[in-house]
Length: 422
Image (cartoon, rainbow, N blue to C red; front, side):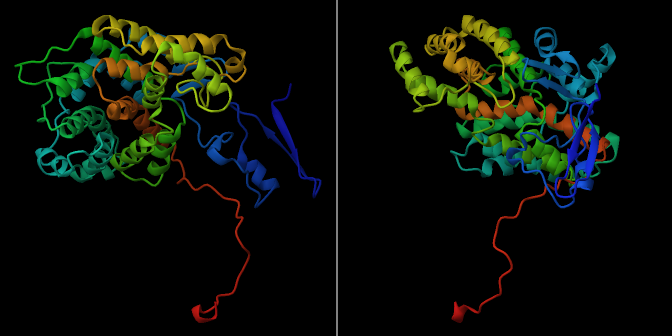
């Protein structure tokens, strides 16, 4: 069977045969046959804007792999910083590489004192942590002007390292500022996830000792969020990066995209939904209202997955471990019943409404006392290595500056009329 597609312009009778390569066809061949004719694809639902070797996502079969490694294996056997290395450099590190990488990340967690004393303290007392984080990431570019030298591999490595290491510090700082608590400095004796929990919760104790189960759960959630192909924020990172902006500016733009409730706020919406249902006896009426089009089942279904999100099963397992430590959430029984109904009801099955990664992550964060306005901040910490991997790949591909076309639907030419004659 020939792996090609033939397109015929019925106006002229001319045809072009285009090879199908890696599941796609080259748009340049179309433009040769149809100059000035653009594909109309709002939301880019059927358009590949780039090629990438980072994440393999098969939504039909519920498969997610980072650089070829199944997400299930990485979540079970790896840790977040090792996965960061894999995403950025294409291979799992050997022992020496991992030791050097972890050392570099650990000793770049501190931020400039001016960022804390002058910048963060300038926000209003009730500023949203995500808004503070967006601003702080962008501000880092003013502290590291050499970041503009994006074609120097050594400089790129430093900025990548700084972003991965400093974002948890900025995130914890934003939280502490939002609740009027003093900033906690990083502790280089703790690992990545433990250090974040220390910066969040340490009060007056000489050293904070995070619960290992909670630290492991957080590390796993960061792995699951590390990359997810060309989503809204990752595409934003690549689009802004294609202008050759520095990585801090591009990462701030990606964080802003994640800030939107349609992207990074899904797990928060799940908690709101579970709270609205309130009690076990309200589940059936709620399900019927969803079927009647009067509500939405948050945390179910996905733009890409048409089967069970492979990350959801991993998160559910982590939820069980967390609740063994923190106590069972009163919302868990509601969540479990919703999942049971959706997986066995033809209405939801026919619409591919299976649980996604967001369905249980909010419950885990809530059990760990992380407030809802920090949920998207947590997402940002996890997704940063994915954004940076795509930014680096985009530069290595020498990708042209992003410049989509449009179909103009406005008025034709009109003549200017002076204001007194209108």
